[in-house]
Length: 89
Image (tube, rainbow, N blue to C red; front, side):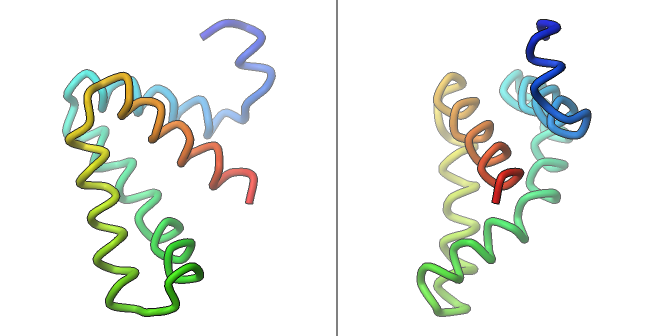
């Protein structure tokens, strides 16, 4: 990453961006690590919106499933958006 980006983001965010690149390239372990890190925060964000535990669980898994099926450019955009959004909540 460029030096400017390294100054803008925390070391954990930069690590996440590397995991995103690896996941987009087809690394299932990197994608699983992102899922492990963000499943719970995404679930809670969705739960606040739908106010139903079962629906929140279903929508959380559906959102990750859809991201994993998206074409690489779109998947990268959504995962990065998720990471950055969560960091600034």
